[in-house]
Image (cartoon, rainbow, N blue to C red; front, side, top):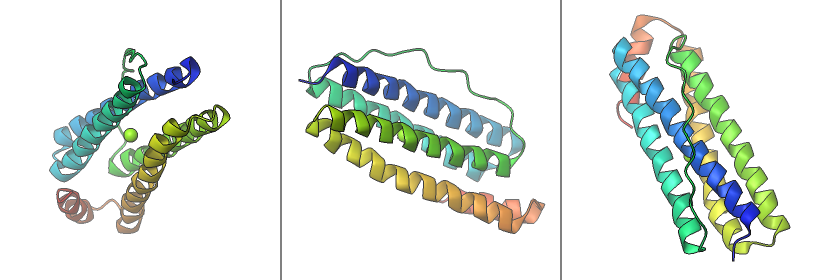
Length: 161
Ligand code: MG
């Protein structure tokens, strides 16, 4: 059996994954409006991944016989200060998500909940990639600068995701 405390913390994370999806969808809508189709595609794909993460956490609770309780999703920002500001935000957000999974792992260890630890390992590994890919885009934007031609090129590249 999974403890109520552990189940509550996973339910919290389910909400956080939907919050993330909403944040990325809002970024995608912003990029669509600015006609950065590649960046819009990248952030939309990211949003879909976040919803898959929520589902994975929900499955874990179902399998462990715990209730899934959905909370209201937070309203995301609608305006951003250009592509670099958006991807800096993505990186910061993913670092925050990583710290949340570390805390959940601390709890799972405290409770000797080995099944949840094994599930969380997947997410902790996944976060390495999430942070690395956001960081790579931030670095490229910082290197290339804000000119139209460099943004055009990066937009094309991100369309390949
Ligand atoms: Mg996620």
